[in-house]
Image (cartoon, rainbow, N blue to C red; front, side, top):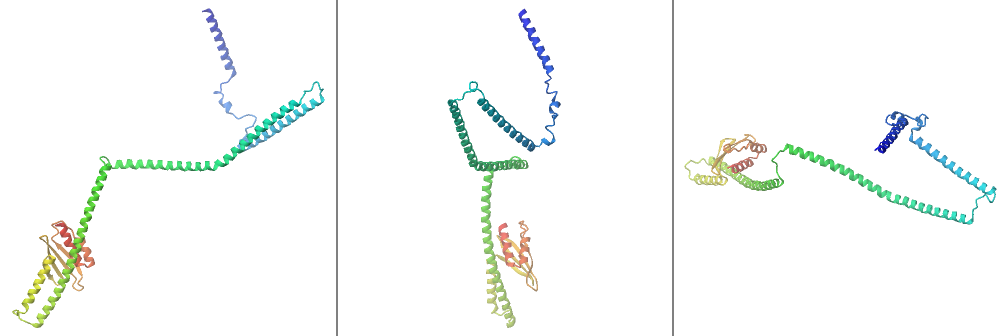
Length: 344
């Protein structure tokens, strides 16, 4: 135990002396930061030497000067050794034999060979650099373009995610799934095809009805002209009512008019006034009355009205206006009858 206490005292004294020496050394760099960061007092790093170009020029000049100084030193040393070897006594001078010269020559040749190999390697490296520089530049350009494309795609992905988030916020659950949407699309396509077929059928019916109306109207006009001629002939003949010659002609006209009405579906037609014609059609056992009013002087279609479609909830006002504007009475009748057949 006494030996141990002596060792501890020696260690304590050593530590105390080390602490005193450390405090006297003043190497607390943290407390001397201002002194270390202060500019040197010799003015070497003045305002004129802070430019890197000036510092590089000074460095190049000093390096050149040191190389010249080294060369002069080696030259003077060689001259001094050469003169010492010549003027000194033969016994004191260093003896240089032919073997030493041969050895030095071999060493020089080895160094020259190493220098030649190094120069060849340097030339090869330079050639490789010149050869590979365009390829490296192309790879760099491609890499730069790829980086720009990746940045653009990343921005597009972010925009798509934001748009998706907005859509999800705008359209909350429950939303269509892909199978449900595809089934809905297939159903809509089928429905559109069926509607297209119905439209084609309705158009064909309209065309047929329009043709029938035109032919019937032409026949009515011809019958009207024939009636006018007959009336003129009756007035010219000035026959009595009991004249038997008029009966067959009247029966023929009435039969022709009844056939025409049955063909076109007209149940009744009469002139309300000189410029107003009222036509009544039976569409699937439902009477539809169409009143046409013409201008007295020009005999153009002025207005028209339809009775019998209001109970079905069919509005044909736009249809009437369009045909009145084009002065198409036949097309108006055909369109109204087509709308009536579609509604009933």
